[in-house]
Amino acid sequence: MNDMKPVGANEAAPVLPSLAISVRGLTKRYGTVPALDGIDLDVPRGMIFGILGPNGAGKTTLIRLLATLARPDGGTASVMGHDLVSSPQAVRGLIALTGQFASLDEDLTGRENLIMLARLWGFSANAAKERADELLAAFELSDASRKQVKSYSGGMRRRLDIAASLIVTPGVLFLDEPTTGLDPKARQGVWKMIRSLAQSGVTILLTTQYLEEADQLAARIAVIDRGRKIAEGTSRELKSAIGSGFLHVALGDHARLGEAEAILEQALGAPVQRSAEGAQLSVVAGSTRAANEALGLLISAGIELSDFSMGSPSLDEVFFALTGQPMDEEAGGETS
Amino acid sequence: MSSVETGPALLSHAARPPRPSALANALTFGWRAVLKFKHVPEQLFDLIMTPLMFTLLFTFVFGGALAGSTSDYLQFFLPGILVQTVVFNSVYSGMGLSTDLSKGLFDRFRSLPIWSLSPFAGLMVGDVLRHTIAGLIILSVGLALGYRPEAGIVGVLFSFFLLIVIGFGVGWIFIVLGLLIRTPMTVMTIGFTFIFPLVFASNIMVRPETMPEWLEAIVVRNPVTHMATALRGLMSGTATAGDVVLALTAPVLLTIALSPLVLWLYRRN
Image 1 (cartoon, helix red, strand yellow):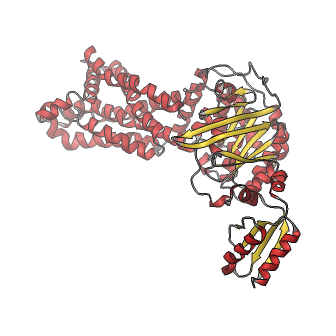
Image 2: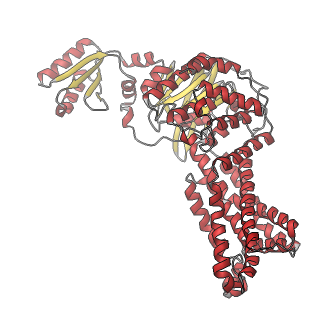
Image 3: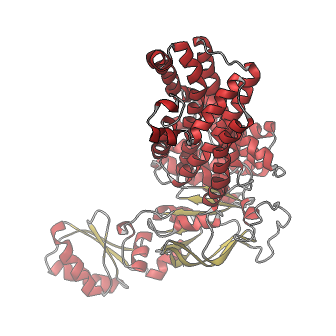
C-alpha cells in the first residue's frame, strides 16, 4: 500500500471531474454475509446525496468503504477522482467522516479535541488554537469549549463531531446517520448546518433511516436494501414512480383492520401497508375512480372509516412499494 | 443557529496547511496522552493503589516472617514490586485502545491522511508516562520506608529504563487484546487472567528456593523472575549483562511476535 504518498499532487480528478463519488459494482462481505452486493452510485459535486435504508441495509458499510476504513471485496470506487484502493491516502486528504457515534475523546475538552485534529492536519500550535476557536464559535460551543466532552449533551457532541470534520474544508463529507438519537430541536439544528455546508460547495453523502430526513435534505436519494440499490432518484421521482394515487384509510374500529386490508388488496390489486401505529392503511389506488370503488366496498362491508385521503406516497410507502415490506419491520442490527 | 450564517464564511477561510511529518503526528498523539493525565488525575490512584497496598502489606505483615526483618524484606521486595507495577499497568494502553475503538475515535483517525501507526506512538507515550510516574511514586514510598538502592541514582536510572522496556514489551499483549475486544473491562479481565499467575509464580515476593521443587522449576524459568532479578541487580549494582539480557528476552520476543500482528489487526477492516 502506498499509504505515505503525499496528497495534492493529483488534485484534479483524472476522469469525470464533475463527480465527487463514483461507484461501480461495489461489494463487501463479512464472512459469507454480503453487506454490499454490487452497488453503483454517481454523486455529482456539491450535492447532498442521501442513502436511505433500514438497519442492516449496508449504509454504514458503504460509508466505511468510501472513507477508506474498509477495503472492498469487489468493484471499483473513486472519491474526488482518486481510486479508493490504489490511493487511499489521497482520498483521506479530501474527505471527512462523521460516524454514527460521536467519535471524540470524552476525557478531553471540546477545544482540545479540535486542536488535536487540527495538529494532525498539520496546523501549527497557534493556528490550531485559532481554528478550534473559530469552529467552536461557529457551532455555538464557545461556552463549553473548556469542558470535557463527557459533560456534553447529545446535540453538543454531534455539533462538535461535525465541527471536527471541518478542520479543513473537505471535498466530500460523509455523515452516517447524523441525527440518530437527537431530539427534534437538535435535529433541526444539524439539518440547517448540513444545508449551509452544501450551499458552500461541500459534497455531502449522508445515510439515514429517517425518510423525512432524506426528503428534507437530499437532492437525490438512493434507496438500499440488503446491500443492493433498489431505487434512485429525487424524492419526487421516487414518489411518482410508485404512482401518485395513494389511498390512505383510517379505521374507527381497529378490530376490523385485517378485514379492511383484505378488501382493499382485492379491490385494488396492490399490497396494503399498515402504518407503524397500525391505525392506518395505505395502498396504491391508481386512480380516484378505483379508490372510490374500494371505499364503497369498505362501507358496504360495514367497516367504519374515521378518515380517508388521496395523496402522494410518503417515502415510507415508497420503500414498502419497492421492497414489499415496511422499513421499520426489517430486523437486524446495523452492519459495521 | 448562527452556524447557518457563519458556516460558509468559515469554510472559505480554512486554508489547507502542508502535510505534517509522521513524527509530528506521533507527537500530537503523545500530547493527547499527556492531556489524559491532566483531565483524569484519578487514574494515578488506579496505577499505584495495588502496588502500594502490596508494598505495605508484604513488608509489614509478611516481611518479618519471610526475611527475618521488615527492612530486609523491603530491600528484597521493592525492585520486584516495581516490576509488578509496570506489568500490571501495561493493561491501560490496551484498555484505552479498546475505548477509542468502541467510541469510533479510531475511525476518525484512520480516515485522516496521517501516518497510520501514529496513534500507537501516542499509546506508547502514555505508557512511558504511566510507568515513570507510578515507578517514581512506589520508589519514593520505598525510600520513605527505608529502602536504599545501593547503586545510587545511576542504578535507579538503569532500572527505570529497564522497567519502561518491560512495560513496552508486555504492553503488546494488551494492545492485541484491545484491538480484538471492544469492552475495556474485558480487556483487563482477560489480560489479568494471563498476567496474574505470571506475576505471582515469580521471585517477586518470595525466593524460589523455598518453594516445592516442581514450582521452583517453573518459577526460575518465568520471564517475570528474570525481570525482577535484573532489577534487583541494577538497583544494588550487582547485575550482570546476562541478567539484563535474560530480562530483556521476553519484551523483545513479544515485540517481534506481536507488533506485526498488531499492524495486521489494525489494518484489517
